[in-house]
Amino acid sequence: MHAGRETQRGSASVEHAGLVALVSLLLLVAIAAVAARGEVDAGRDLAGTIGRRIACGPRLPDACRHHPLVPAYGWPLARLARALAPALVAKSGSSGLPLVPVDFRRCRRESCAVAADPHLTASGRRTTAFTQIVDRRRSLGWVELTYWLYRPSLGWEGVVRRAGKAQIDAAAGVQVLLEDDPALVPLETLPGRNHYEFPASERPPWQWGVDGLYPGWSS
Image (cartoon, rainbow, N blue to C red; front, side, top):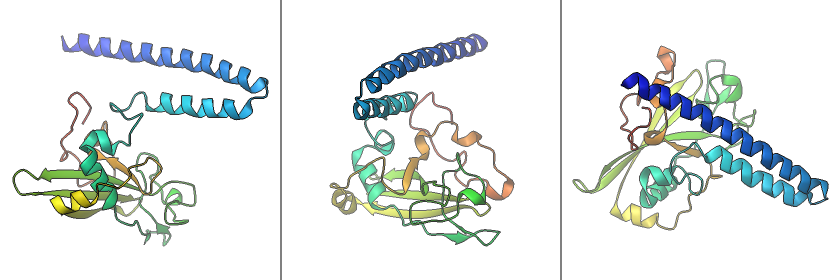
């Protein structure tokens, strides 16, 4: 029975990918036609919208309209996570280069984590923090937020914040935008988070210790 389910799931994934490719091709033809008539700006806007929709399709529910923090934690805690996000500073790596925290899924070498300004690396990577929230509001009246920071060759660092009702209420007006820096990625909804391979010196302290929020997603 299990093998059957795996086969069906794989088939559906291939069919879904094929359908996305076909729709993308048709839309690109439409964009080219718009641009050919001189409506270049309109074509670019349409292309940008289509690109965002295709990119967010395989993600979490509602991720096309909201930052991933929102479906992961709800609005009050998403705003709190943004409000309490630490300033990400550079630290000297093994080579002596100043390294800032980056997204480990896209950068595992010092060369792509060298600081250029407070929000970008020299190779154009955004500074990134992975978030974990422990909600104890019902029992103890507080929530604990951990911001996990990864620097290639230096490994992981955890920055912990604890907040009560007053701080959550104070963050009610904070905006949660995809373009905000640092980029925040909730571990609770990160597919496959426990299955990334790291050298022993860079193994995440959070691995296999964060409960997923969506049943059925890989942990």
